[in-house]
Image 1 (tube, one colour):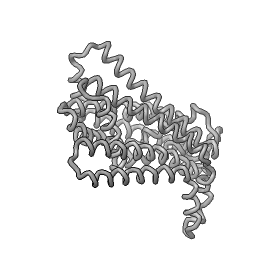
Image 2 (cartoon, helix red, strand yellow; image 1 turned 90 degrees about the horizontal axis):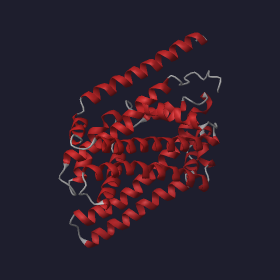
Image 3 (spheres, rainbow, N blue to C red; image 1 turned 180 degrees about the vertical axis):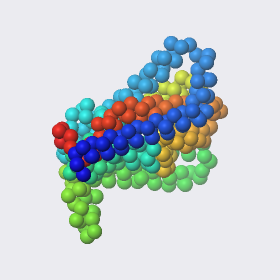
Image 4 (cartoon, helix red, strand yellow; image 1 turned 120 degrees about the vertical axis):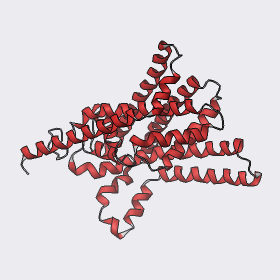
Length: 325
């Protein structure tokens, strides 16, 4: 294929991605009754207060994804060093591709196509390390929250509850030990004859030391605090009677359940809303407000970044012919 044909094909693919993304987003927003409920809840609230609170939540969205860009930049330092702005471009582009791919798989493609071709598969492995770090925190805090939830709301035998707590402790330790010794995974793959021939792709797992893994999980923890704060702010604002500890517990549980469910970002708002209502019904009967809060965060954290990312889609490097590479 000639260089000119590659450019034409590349442009057509990028244009198709952008059109497809906007079409999906438009139809989902038009059909989303939950966002209408959210606007209804705001009718009697002063406009300055609305702008202030929503503005803070939107600002936290940018903080969240800038932290993810910092983590991505750090992950790539072993593979192909990239600048912070380049990391931001790839993160937002990945969010655009993630909205119409199962379990956010498009996010991997959106990022690694900013790398040179020979580094892309290794980049996927490195990105997986960051994803595992985020999953570790989601599971650890979710398991702790689950213990408090059962203690408060589910009648259970004392001995059975103690057993559950012990199981939760081992559950948390397993994830933490596995993460901080992720090079073991490299050793396991090397011990398998079939996967040994692909070691040049996953050998990066053996390069991450505990100090580096700690820095990566610090980025993950900062992100966890940020998007937890978004839920906390909106729930306190729209359902002022809720106790702070209850919001934190239910939010951690919500993240845990969401991480365990297969999803499609664009349609994930329905899953998020149903899950949130089932959890928060133990502490509040304002189900409409719970659904509205969840839908608004979905709009701010998923849809707005996906729209912004369409600009960066046109910087994707499918054929590895950019001068930067």
